[in-house]
Image 1 (spheres, rainbow, N blue to C red):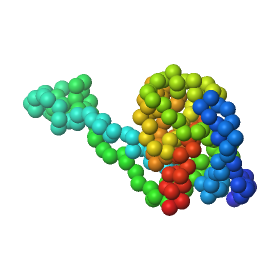
Image 2: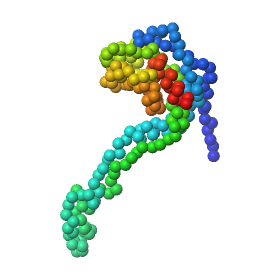
Image 3: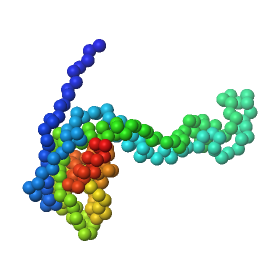
Image 4: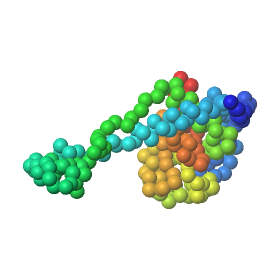
Length: 224
């Protein structure tokens, strides 16, 4: 059997630094060092696949239901005699072959949730973050402090960072209600805290925007 050689991508072990920008998109003069154990590993594509598949499966409600033969309301009287009609025998009006009858092997409520090991989920997130780092799709932003929620402010932030037409995820260190409410109505942008950042959100976004305070919590979770 012939096997094709697979192309492997090796990531540099050098320290990766990213400039810290302010809310106006300008350089603050500071830099953040990305942990190579999180942002510089050899990605495991299968771990990413398993984690994304579990995330999408767990979101399914599983409340689909159709009535089967025994659940249809109707008479149990034999609708015609057994023989001599020239057609197939029929014993019930609830026969699935008749209009209004029950459904054969219809969907029933079920649980679609899947389970994967914590180490695999951790590896998947590290792999997805390493891919984003290699693609230079990570932006570091100074911590945001807004007194009130305003979508206009968030739109101005996206425009300053050049992300108005891209799907982005803003990662906060701690919950900031004003920032979250400011982005809630936007289709291509979302806000999460570092502990809620999952592989699906990382892979689905074009750009990841990290606040400075988000790295401490992310490192404590993924390096534990």
